[in-house]
Image 1 (cartoon, rainbow, N blue to C red):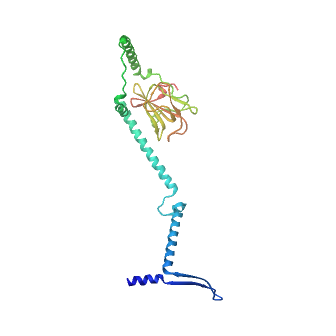
Image 2 (cartoon, one colour; image 1 turned 120 degrees about the vertical axis):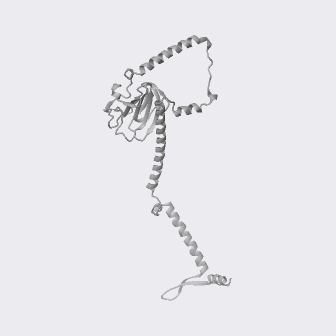
Image 3 (cartoon, rainbow, N blue to C red; image 1 turned 90 degrees about the horizontal axis):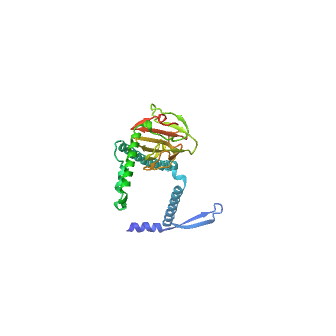
Length: 283
């Protein structure tokens, strides 16, 4: 306790700082100080300087010179890469769903999306229509006519040579079908904003974005036919939509990495094999 008192008394001892004129030895300025007061003032001044330096570094570009702190372009690159990875994950998931749907269709099964839609439909929304018993004869006659027309269409659809294909795009062929370099289709060039039409009536089994071919739309037709339209600028139909032959489904574009200019890459597939569209469609 005595040592602490002596130390505290030493800190409280008063000292005087005097400035003399070197020529006349006259006192110019003086100040009364103590060790405790000097220590307090020095601590406060040091704390203020530290706070100001921290604020200066945190609010200006000087923080980029701190070792380990990333630069602005690096942070932007990290955000861009994170968004790109997230988009790629969505595209991979969509591609996997598309391939599973194609496999289900080829094997004669119902795609998973259709099953989920059917399972999610609540029974309360099912509407029952009262049957007209007075038109039994007319209904039977109409059913017979429809069954005959469907059988005739199925017999015709089995022969590819008897199917009438609509031209998907009025334009000029710039690259022909060639399976050796994996070019399973033809490239058509036309005027800007030209409409792309469905070659046959069918169902949209995929409508979305892919990294290499941009906006793509796939149509499933009868007789195990699938038509593909790539590098579109805009898609006019969604997955699951029913389309008629000659109906507009997309706008010509230049999207995707595997493109060198505005054009349509058109493919035609039959039972998993690529067909030369020029053998079936008069371009």
